[in-house]
Length: 507
Ligand code: PHE
Image 1 (cartoon, rainbow, N blue to C red):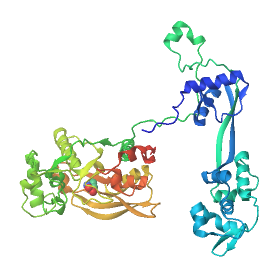
Image 2: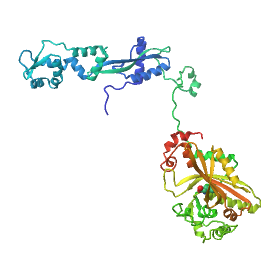
Image 3: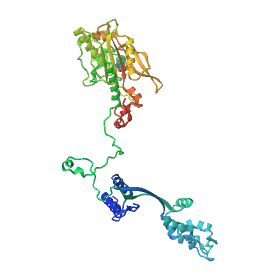
Image 4: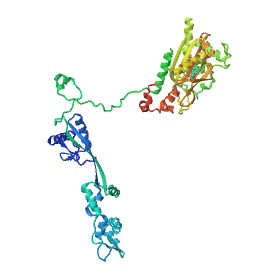
């Protein structure tokens, strides 16, 4: 480690030196060159102290800004030994015996080259044969005198001259900031450390009466608080939850990611050959790979409706396999939860003979075996709404969706006929996006098919309307995040989630 020429002076020592200087004289005219026991003190140190002393009215100070010229090493050399052209002049003999160029170089080194041209231009020397002789008896070395004057006066009034000297690198401007210091109204040399708090001891001993307390600095900038923040997806989820609760929905228990194919697909009248049931689209479990814990009589009815039909349907007409239904998977949609919930509701109805309307929602994670890109992750969150009641129609579905999305601030909506194995009719939901100036698909919806509801044991006159959407898409649109991987998944920067204004948005 490099050792500086003088060890830094302790803050207390500088403070004591300033105060004793003030006590002796009336003030310190300029802290420039202020020394403590012979060691010069940095002005930055001094201002730190002055600020604190001023806040306690012990001193007052004013800044002194100064600017002056200082000679460079080369400038000082000229001031001491003359300009290069003058040195060339003095090296050249008078009379008729010239000095050759090599001899001049031998004598003066590089300076011969630097000064030669100007000495000729000044008509101080002239060519004689292959060398030079003096052209005048005596010269006046203005350049040397100029630099000598600047050295003592540290200033020059002619800006042009200064500019030229700077260009030649003979002078450099120096700026300084120092201070003039005077006694303040509460001047004292006995500066005690100020107390910051009234302590129990002070109160007991009565010391608080004589203590000096540090003033509050209301201009101090606070430290950025280290606090947690909600993930934007959690915020959006909370927003959806509130809307559902306001509309009188209750939340379905979704705290499980693993489902059987039975509840995820078969109960939803999704045929076993359906491409969504392929390993390319769905994550299947390997250990345990299967489960057969389904209600056996219901399983029989599901098997029947798939293979033979019933309830006014001709079914799909294929050989339904229980093995296929037993496969465990990471649920591909929260509709798997809805199907199990509706089955349980039907059992309640069977037991009690009393029908009750339900309005349910869920917001939770689902999994798809997708190729990851800017808008797709292998997992995302679904919002699902389910309303079951007697005599519900497509009009109820459309009205419910309008109510729901209005609460989200979406007024312009369009519906497009679509296909889901478990709903008929089915509609994709589009919303007008002002920013993008186009219709954006925001969800999927429909009325659950009788082939799904009747095998469960729900009354025939009950219909169920349902819809689903992702939370990621609207969150991206809302927060302007163009890559889903920035928002969720293993590449997501946690610091971004904490620091970014989106983490602090109210809504
Ligand atoms: N389950 C559907 C999906 O994953 C959404 C949906 C839910 C559609 C309910 C209709 C009814 O996209």
